[in-house]
Length: 262
Ligand code: PLP
Image (cartoon, rainbow, N blue to C red; front, side):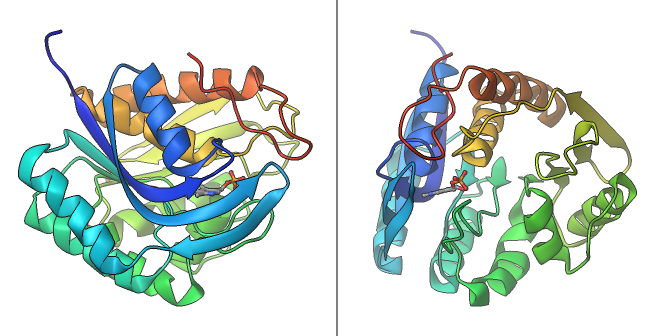
């Protein structure tokens, strides 16, 4: 094989395989990128919900990142569930040390069932330490509200929030439309500090959307690892996640995973 591109996910394990590290690695593989991982937490999880959260020691996260920094430098990196401000501090320090510039921050906060994947006290650390290092930050609407402190009720509000995220230090902001009103067009919004880009897609009526955010940001990261621009990577990622939602696997009795098979 020629050109091997490597992507790293720094995130939590979902034992059910639909979100977190598992979704990220499957997505990297399907998109032709070599996947690597640094675990921040283990969750006991299935389609019915999160049954336990077991965070890693911050030193264990640092050791994983040092191992990769020393030998397997990633072409792009994404973060998912980071859980605590201590882990965020480690990730920010290592990202700066190893000069990971193609860094996607998926600000994972709460699972669909309501379990916290980021402690409330850690939101400030995410904003202060990690956002300024991000090439792209990919919140859904509730996450964008928590990061910016503003209420988002319209597409115009979303544009204001995207501007705020860029002012907070993220080079690009991608606010996803999945949590918008069901009767509104579903639009993902990208802002690069100058212009807005709107990507509209068909809303799929399904309960099998577990891991959607992880999969979308992993696909974006895969494209960035392959040297694509943010806009190009967004197009590929959007096509991948749309197909993954439309072709849901229908497994499990609850909120099932999307379909990572390309
Ligand atoms: N579990 C882990 C480990 C995750 O990283 C994520 C990502 O957001 C989730 C669960 C969330 O899953 P859901 O899409 O069902 O909210």
